[in-house]
Length: 171
Image (cartoon, rainbow, N blue to C red; front, side, top):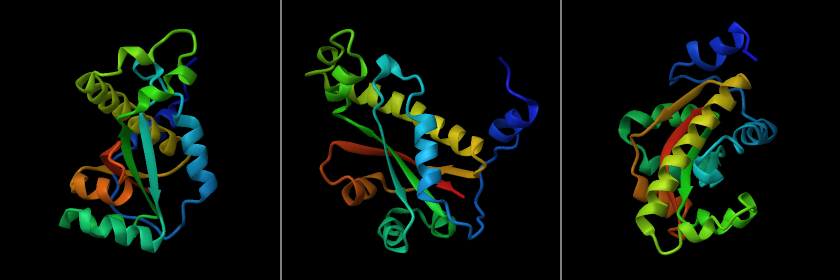
């Protein structure tokens, strides 16, 4: 089955990085719909290591502000929502649920470099699925680096098990 040309245009051909936003809010329902579309996209061994923090409130945006590079402050503060796409370094503890037909967890236990590489690569894939899902639901996206990941991690993922990968403004 092929997708219609308009759909492909929406998801890919007209999907450039956005930096300017309207005041129209991105609702909880829309964020849930994005997650429901992207969560089962294929990853290495179905490991699904991405963890996403959606930042929308003025208070949460102010917590994010100090971690942003100067060139990203205005666009992020103006965006109706910002997704922090991160990866869980303990993703393998969920593998008995995600891969019940075999012992996938044991392949990762005690192998920190394999865990980090797998979490980063598959978490990045899931971040791309989030962008595709958001585009499919009619949102513009502004994925970016340009932030202090250690500061984001300390602020939003203080337990140290989850590491930020990139940010994506949504609106």
